[in-house]
Image 1 (spheres, each protein chain N blue to C red):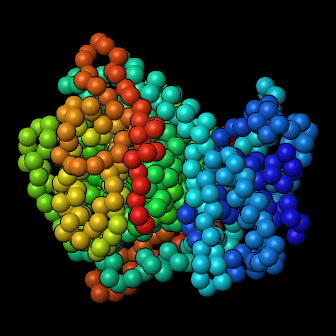
Image 2 (cartoon, one colour):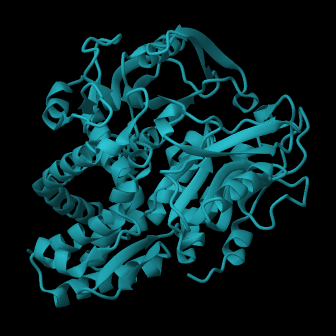
Image 3 (tube, chains in turn yellow, cyan):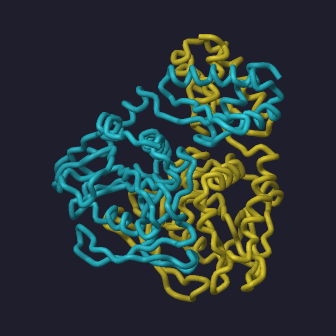
Length: 276
Length: 276
């Protein structure tokens, strides 16, 4: 096989399976190349990625060695993303009765999902995440995209316990905005013990839902390494949870006025530093 | 820029944005290369993809021309996927009271989501799909993965009309298994008129839900080009909808016996032939 063909195959394999460990021994037989040539190829790909700020390749020790692609959003694309989406979110026509913001179109857009998933995964790549947890319904697409880039399963907390989930663990909690007692439950079979969990959700006001998820996850001795939110409200400034990460925040919403949306590109980059 | 670096960048760009049209003019300035060199690069990448059965690159006419990567699952990976997942699904311990099959773990597995999304997208790539529609909750991850590979938005039909969806159109229908009147609704703002829709869901028994979705979509003059299901029951053999596509089917489930799961790799490949 020519080097150019090998580079194409190797780039494709790495990029289409973010964060999946690939064994050099397997790649060597699959691409019919010596490990030393493969290592050179990987070094070339890595250099391009790093130069573009578009990710990195981690070297993995043990059992003949391996590699793993870590996706990131290149700086220029990142700036574009925050600018474009802030603008789309700042549209007066998005304001719904009760001070809610219509975001269903944005949360279903494949480019938005891809970029958000990459940004979240990049921010938490060194936190040793082994499950992404979300609460139905609107946060699921974001959670799926983030889980893809971290190569971990996505676990959906349900509002009602369904027969298809098998035995489930439920909790009650008081919702922040409606002051109502609500329920959430998670399949005991789906949720591993002692997992390192990243919580992903589309929206946070007071943080009651995220706090309830943490309470639910505590029953499984989970270690919550972070809470990644697409959009948080600036009020109340003090949330019910200590720490969270958000892509955007929105000020008090008034009908007829454009929402004041702030993007948190820098904050997001700086605040995250975990020990794996 | 060296050709090898350009091949790495171009492969990455194509693979990480399946089905997104990339303009040759943009690529030419971005990669600082003449269009003629880029065309040669694209031809090399295309040859590798086609040789591996791992996808294709479409050439797009107009405005300086463009290219678009169409993802597929290479035949050996496809066989692996159907074998492994059939085996996982055939586990006696998956049988839940009422003859349900526990699948939440499989439906949250990033590899399963990726492979299923690719298979569905590949099957319907020439159907001119411009939206993927699913019903909350369990089908959403599959729908997100399929929409990613078709580069179209995912639209979620809700069981209840929520304030954050804005104005919504609702219908009532009688569920197949429970003979109960149920509701589903979709945001009028999220759902475009005259869309070509692929319905994606995790499970189908009689097909009442899929039929109801079609009824709902008809209010938006949508053209449903297909219904892609992860798992269908073999009974009843006649469903309430005329046509559907399923990855797996399961025979009557009895407690204490392994479920009889059949995979439909060939049927899936053969039955789909649409005119774009």
